Image (cartoon, rainbow, N blue to C red; front, side):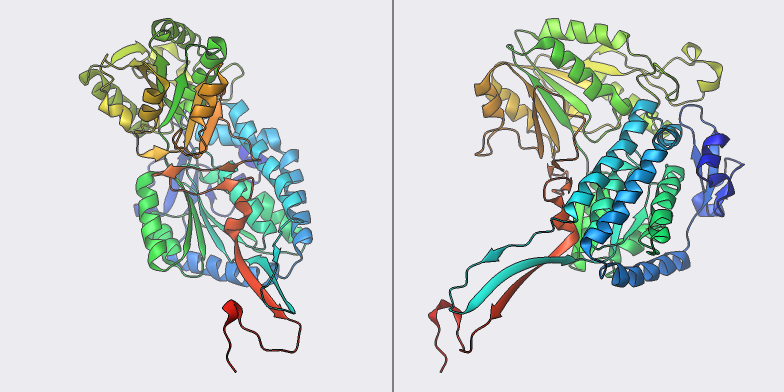
Length: 516
């Protein structure tokens, strides 16, 4: 553990307490303690920022933006290229630190850092493609064009479950667009935040660009509320719960700022009778249990055609018996712990509610028996990945709620329209999937008229989890409507300007208006 901290200089970082008591609290001591969710042991403490610290960081960000915006975009891309390469050099160690602090298995931790590297590569190319348009003017000897201009300091608020990649989606694109980023991370994952940001800012500083990437670590009342209400941040990009998003969206809207919201997801998988059931099974299991169910794209609801439901549920239960649960840093582990004890309690409440509502436990359903774990993991936050079959009438209200845990609710349907309607019946609209061998069913699910999946992400013959950086990531309804990562998501970090040039010598008005 301490070797990983030393690898990134965190053992000597001025705001790190390497031997915390474990009972410090942000409110009483001004320190947040990062715990290893697999062992329950404290890793290190981090001194929190004060209102004065926040103000100093924000002033630096404003000054840095005025310098950074003047750097040509391809030169900004070169900075990002070198940052991506610096992450390549520490890929496995940084991924291991992420797994230690967050609890996802090492392969997923490394994969998350790889995602930041990938978006850095994408952003480097984008730095030479911040295209505007030219358009004809209706007036003679006039020209029209649009251009995209740097926006300003961006406040990036991230959740605990993807503490590296979601920042990367924002920071790498914002940087090539000419913006600077101030990162407010979850208090559950401050160590990976400091390590990640220090690397980016070290590279930028070596290339002559100070304060492009900064961090403020603090409670919502001290830092969060100040940031979202601060007019110096024209864009707030926030990832988290729907409740948090409503608060952020409301405050930012009051000052007419911009929001990029990536909120909850209650994602569904539909399996048609003509589907490749082996493929559907593997994809559904990973989608449901990956990151111990703590992805916004986790598969939480499964809709099976009634003709294949019994067979598929039997195979699903068997597959769950093979899942290896344990130390996320050990080879062979497929599922690590939940992030906190309160997350375990939420899991237990959801399972109890499902039972009361007539659900049948097919697999899992409880906290993992500590006696099944090595001694050093018995204080960890481990649960058994769970499958719950809904009653025959499909009435299971708890499934309409997003529980951030590995619970998969199973329903049956008779025809595809019924399945799509049930999939779309929740408040969120992030990710969705269908498994089918029919092109008609696939196209019905992706209906361009919008009567199919109502989610921002729709997959055919692959699961709800594991988006690539090339496409825009985000969802609809209570998921917030934001888009990050690929496609034209870079436009969120810039402002559009329409330019009209009169290169003649006459006064002319549009719409045929004469004023003489």
